[in-house]
Image (cartoon, rainbow, N blue to C red):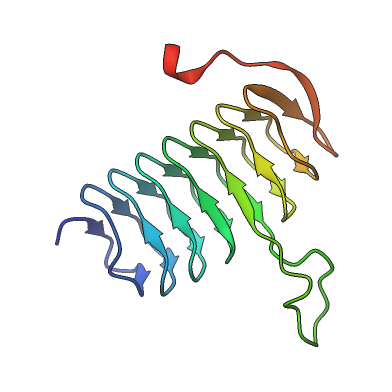
Length: 160
């Protein structure tokens, strides 16, 4: 096996890169793709068809639902929640309400953040803990709050 999987993790895909570690009680659904050298913390849910790049760190109890794409070198803090239904209801066809989410290279998402579907988080942006992202976030932007608002810029992560 080219990656590590804790004995309690459920992994329903074979598309996992070398050096990746999937910790206890996590669930990786069918057709998900996880790149190389990633860390998937305890209790993480990665939905069907989710795409995760290389060197991504997903902290404990985060939920990445179908329609989410995470590029390389992204940090996702504990208890981050993504959505994929812009107007959720308990019944009926939701295909018209489905929206995708893109988290671009080098982005950092703080603990307990909610990312409303249909948005893009720009390269190297930083989302403060406890934020609710309701619109696109620009490259290198620092945002936080509910709703998340731009409050500054962050240094390009590649220069560190």
